[in-house]
Image (cartoon, rainbow, N blue to C red; front, side):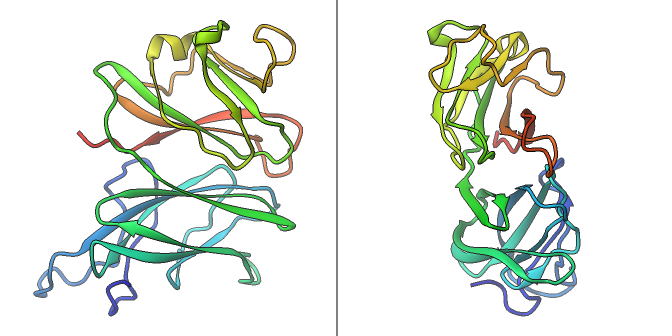
Length: 245
């Protein structure tokens, strides 16, 4: 349940400055209790030609969600936890594509990602761990968004077995967090079919020298396609995640 009067809310800003989301807050002069907020990050890897509309607990976000984009927002809860419904809709007809009801908690971040297509849509829901990495290190995890790819392995910083940080990542799955150094990430991030040997032509992605990564941060690496109509090429996109210090 949410704050009833204003229809509970909120939002919608691109998720770069995580704590600068827009909201429909009440008049600051009114004497209302301090709101209980829960935050979410939306990711769009839905392979259809149109952008998506999101409806969160009955409130439609004003910004259309483009493929590969991220949106951050928050809801006001009545208590320290509440069940919130996330719905994706067609931007022209308003027709519902799919919907899910998830439990959000006070001051927590939750990731909701849409992938697949109209024939097989899917919503991934996953709480974020905001604990910072060790000093000078990076925490990262990976999400597999392509139904056209088999299970995947991810290597960071080299091709030896100890450099394999993710094994058998299947479509729709989000890996656990991995802590690594910036040097290793700049050296190489290689994605290849599960069980393949690094250094061969089987590598799907070989990423080196990314300038978007910085120490003492948390990242999500999304494995998918560079465009909604592209089911052949594969890329890896890094998204900055919130950190609680």
